Image (tube, rainbow, N blue to C red; front, side, top):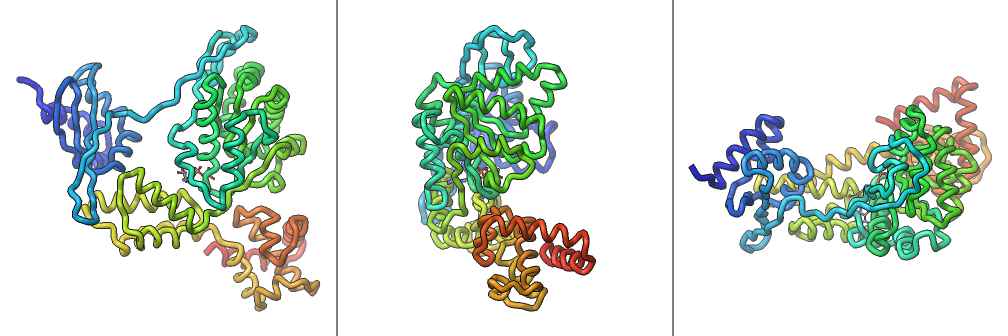
Length: 475
Ligand SMILES: Nc1ncnc2c1ncn2[C@@H]1O[C@H](COP(=O)(O)OP(=O)(O)OP(=O)(O)O)[C@@H](O)[C@H]1O
């Protein structure tokens, strides 16, 4: 019997159903229709671009195995995306995309001197001792400058990133340290710089690595007794991008090895790009000599995006996903999710998913429901204003009194407690806490935190204040 699109797809489905959870199967595979089989390519129709991206991200492997079983090694999968235009009376339209069409950055060939012999570090940490190794840059090509929208909140960091990408190692922004709160685009920008450098200077060896992975690799190298290979590997990189560098905090061995690598790269005109959720002045348990190196180049902050930037980010995401949404819903999202771009994107994805699975229009009610989930989450990160309000209420004073310049003991203590909790419960820098709590400088905030620490271990009544307020703030 000759194969049809349907028979091939049914066999694939049987295989997939056996290998994933029934919920996932129901959600992601039942809505798919097999449409065509020609030249060993099976075309399947999926309900939306979001759906397609989800399949490609999570199920491409199993799809590949299933299809290869059915059609052999030359099997191809083509997605046909049915765009649901929920607004206006436009006809649905379709778009064809071959599987795994996302461009991947090429491997980079690097000549490594035949100096070290032990081939222990795996790709991307390959094997000094073998000539011409391939180093995967680990860059995500979707995180590029085009998709990183510019706004007041990121202008300095973005421009510095572009300058570095134009002339890696050749500007005074070395290292370039990008810092800012959760979900504000540090990782995206780090990748964008790397991607742009690979475009402009394909011969340069670029490596993106998280500080966590760097630490694991280092520990592994110590265990396997090839620390020198590890260092040597990093010293051949032209552009090193280390994400979440604050995670080196308290890890003396890793800091030491990073210090040597950093110095070598810097001295040889190689570019280092670091990201962190804190400004250097707020990093704790990082050695002074390393901190002072972080401050050598430029520290550029990513702030919370303003309203216009949030709207632009939402519209851009919708455009890329091929989805339309009325302006009042876009504005509603931008007005309600303000402090974390990842959450903003999450809300958009949930909205699209809801409307695409349930074949429902995206309405303001649906948006409100979804935003509630996100805003609940964001509430966990309390604001400095909220902390000041809770502390002032607790001590029965108003916020202006708490912020005032008075030296009266109980007011000073209330102010110090507000600073202490702002440090504890927010990601704001000491400087920013100081400026929001009565225009004080960062040294005053630091002093306040230490005083609260000391008093809570020596003064019972004061400890009670700390405990009560802690409870109130974490409710
Ligand atoms: N300016 C921007 N334009 C478009 N998208 C953005 C922008 N900034 C951030 N994003 C998107 O927001 C999401 C979160 O960004 P990213 O992961 O880079 O944040 P982060 O600061 O590294 O977060 P974390 O602190 O959790 O490591 C990503 O999907 C990113 O593409």
